[in-house]
Length: 287
Length: 331
Image 1 (cartoon, each protein chain N blue to C red):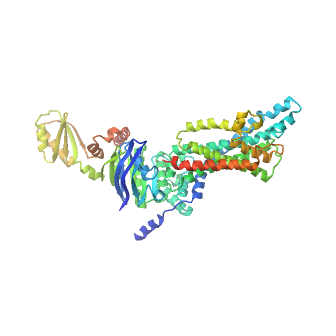
Image 2 (image 1 turned 60 degrees about the vertical axis):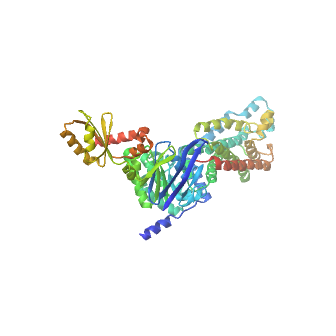
Image 3 (image 1 turned 180 degrees about the horizontal axis):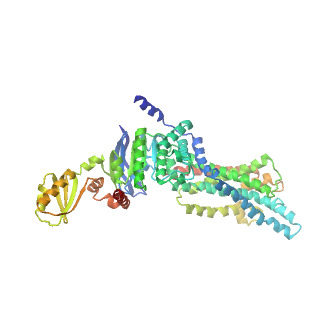
């Protein structure tokens, strides 16, 4: 009997979780739904292909130029910094995909609240920081994985990369990483108190297109009306795209700011957004 | 030893809604302590405070000596929680769900794998472990929640309405699992319920709670004994004024009340008294037309102290009772 008792006591040794393990387990829980489910994995990969085909090939601004006059290529080069509008747009699409994936991933916390999962994990001895960072990691990993696929498909479909080195690709992805990190934090924050999916959908619809159109995803800032230029020059999406284009497209592309400054801006956005979300979650994320 | 000590715990929502209004009680090591009351009585709010999900607006509680206000991480590490909802992720397998919580409790992988196998075996889900939770039945999901709540081998387990929404057979099965697990892991259980039978069947002691206040604490048997006995109700076709006297003078009758044309007789033991009463009445040429015997139930205890019946307040319970009666008649 004594032996039995002591065995129970030993087994009852209270464990405390390690931050990294807890955070990764939470992120992995969300990721499993994606990589263990072939249908969702394929759909999430097909989506960027459709975007590229529709926006890049059907919505081909480059074709407008070439059909008007023979001096078009020069004009196109002057405005977009490349003679291939498809290549120009592909980087916009990479950013579009990164933010839409971050939105969905960040806001999935709404469902977790609804099904009591948040309550459940709040009674475990983990920190709220783990919960928030786990959500962000899930979105960032999904976004980057999809971006890789999208880039490969874009190249297959005829995207031309002037600089195609490990460094240039990594530079473009580092920018997407920061953008996705900041956006995920923003959307986790927006979803912290939401309990119903309708508000989630409303927020996504409200912010998705403005974030995209008030950026250099489709056109350079130089041909925008000045009010839109102002908004776009504050939009972090513009900076991520600018870095990607100047890293991959070529010397004729004029970046929004020097890559160093753009990285700094994106870094501040990502760290700042995450800090705000983590601080507010201490008060807002509760049972 | 008191493993949970609650001292004047209160929760006021939005400045005026007093969901929990200064409750104090102790839970002894190894017992099953139940919070019984209708929906909205403050049971879930209390459990949320004790499991550190929400912070109290007044008072404090100690679990294993740790304050829920000051030592929340220690409290969390030493308790298990089985919430009211099904919280397991439907898109993952049962195994993945329980493994996730093992990670969140920081249980080393080798220990965790042994425990998971053991717990799934105990709740008889070993064969379903690699299936997605979406394919589980309600009873299986409840059992999975139980296994998940036990992954850290908690000295104290909190169960919030553990059988809510389950059918009768499943409910009984879940009760048996709870008892089995409690025995095996030598836990102290704190549970809430609005099912009278559940409180009666499972709990060593219960607290009756209404409008955020504890009305009475005690063992179900003791609470029922305080009512003073069984109730026999009868009516006769040829009623006469002297009948009440006859009943009152019968041996074993404690109290007689006439309500309408029905006599309510309080007795120590209705089983032995009823045949005698029938014999007595037929010898006096009375024709008994209706007769029923009621054992003192928690509902009557509740009625005694709050002035209202929980059964009447809970449509859900009535359905449960009816269902049970139907089961009985079918057999």
